[in-house]
Image (cartoon, rainbow over all chains, first blue to last red; front, side, top):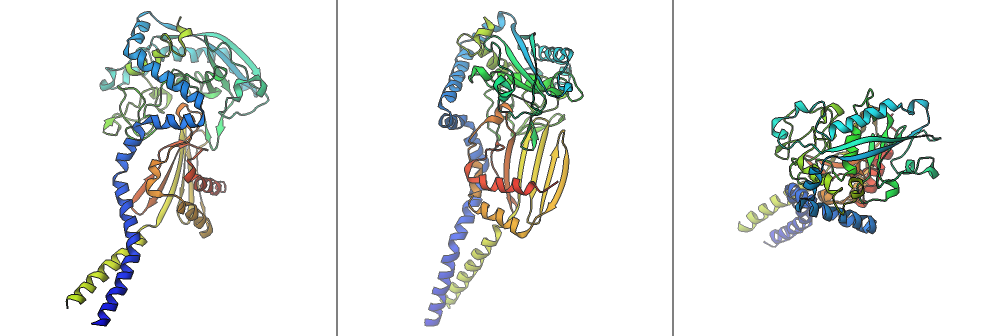
Length: 324
Length: 143
């Protein structure tokens, strides 16, 4: 009897020592089950991201929050509708062509091609728009922005490649200084931007940042019409410059792009996806300019994106001076 | 008799619980970067690192890794609360306007894949930073 008791206590001891690990694995299982839920909960609150930014750079975060508040107000009060009714907003573009090799000093015709592509995309005349599925045609939008070529600044630079760190925007770092950012869209065209094993085709700055770096940067091979490009990289970047986010909200299902009429998705598209490509329970709008599909397969903005963009030009908006 | 039955139950429990510890082995680690027009996937299993890039500089290569390499990764991984990596916050958002590559880390333990939300490549959340650095250091040998 005593022996059995001893055996039992010994086993209890073993049981107890293993118990901790069993609890752990149970917790992990529960965590996995809750994963989907926590992703949704976590990412709906982009305020969380904003809080991070505030900690990192209080001033920028406050400015961007102010842009968001203004966007909400402008949409609610119909300011964007009035702006749209006024007719087209005209945006002059200043190109800064920074070249090392002569091939990077791209011709005026290539820049004009780029302006043409932007004008197509912001006036609902994208050449591929007849392929937009009917479910999305209903929200396809004519943004009503016209771009004109204002000036081309050409700078021979010692830099063979650039990092996406705004150095091209200052003559002090062998780049070219911004010109009248309150009136002009500045586009820097550079040789290339290899970045930690990848290659950046173009990048933008959201409204609310410093005027000295305001604008868009482009790899010259993806500017205008080239063997790689029909000019849609610039459309995507100008979308960011006008406060649009990536259509998948830069996160999993539930992450928001602050636009109601774009379907939820959990990541970017690549190449030329076939329709329907279903994620998060709905067909992805893979042909939206704010997705990552290839140039020929990017064909539309939505009405919701239009309101967001026009808010930037409304009274009190970050780019109001461009519309007056 | 009652007691020996109790003992039997105890033994059952004990063996079950201890075998659960074995279940938590890591099969592979994947680090993925992407931006418009290109992507790179670094997949690491106990013996191999596989790197596949798409886009202008498309390439695909594998290299074997040593037991020590894997052990280093596991040591760095041991500092990470794997079950909660989906809750890590990205410390910066340059990828939102394309000024950085998007990056996602995932850990495969048997049939479960634990995945982070996306963060800026080059600025991982602190808890996984040493692990990501170790992965990229291993990848430097793949050519």
